[in-house]
Length: 199
Length: 199
Image (tube, rainbow over all chains, first blue to last red; front, side, top):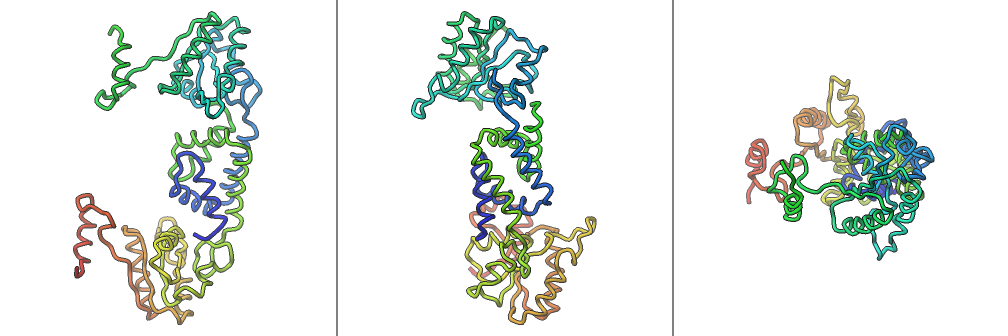
């Protein structure tokens, strides 16, 4: 493959997450072969998304307006605030239709002192202000990933929320829906056992 | 997910081959989060590839010039012509470093009468002209996929080349490198047996 434009496109595509060199090549050939209108639409979709999507100034989730549809909705329960690590997690909860409260999206997913990501970079200050200013919130739900990095973040968040005098809860851990015991590691099994409740 | 620009981008990405709805969503979030310079580069790579890559007027492979680097190279063996189904196959042979002749890329991969793809749409006329005009070619190698649709195409190509009086060969079929017998279907096993040669 000695075409610069093709190689350049493959490089750019391979830099996207989950796309290896082989898929990138396949995509590049597909794009070259696409009707011009389709590739123009793809380009337009990328530039439009970059231009029109910003972070909601209240919750930090992606939004096309200054304040997102969730934060500005009167249909939502403004007494609950769920803390998540990124906008994808908001999407997961919205799709599950189990939650009708508000969200708070952290600015960074994890504390990472080596990269200079401390509590302030993650948006803890912004969260503190929100909890102090918003009297309506009476429950803060921690909905973080279940891994070591998030565990640490969860402990700090718990302390921060408790300081504000609000109730803190966190989503439960255990065997996922459809899960078969033999495929899970001991940490999951242990958590599922320890968090057992009346059947 | 109620953002139009985001949903639009997810739709466009999910229309690409091998990218399901879930990966498309993940990619879209990644792109929104990308530094502006990176997404500009991605857009530029797509539009540059679309603009600067054309089909070589001799072999039909992708090229940045009217005649591709392979067709115009004096280092290649101009007495061999390999017929392949698409530009990706040229890439595969080039990467394998086993072939130094020329290529002929068919305009369509398969005959498909229902879609109106007959021999003419596949570029058989162009191939015939090439074989008639180019005295230097003395071996035509059929390097087609090993599936039913390509088989049919192979038979027609063989007849066409034989008519021109050139020698026709085709790439061999059998167990691929690293292949373990028990994982292959009977057709492959049968071909490997029938095409056996002295060890």
